[in-house]
Length: 74
Image 1 (cartoon, rainbow, N blue to C red):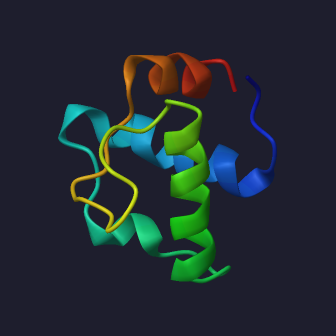
Image 2: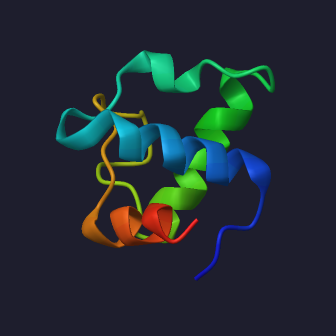
């Protein structure tokens, strides 16, 4: 799978730099708004790139092994 938009790229990059600790609610901080970021995270979970359940979001948000590979490929 490939990154489909700039928001996915930004979220993957932020999560990659967060390391194994992941990110808390600050991951939702973006000029597009927290709702758009939450939808992006759900999309990333559907791809298997983010760990955790979809509803409600569980913090910290962490990349899966596949997500790390996708983020490194950016």
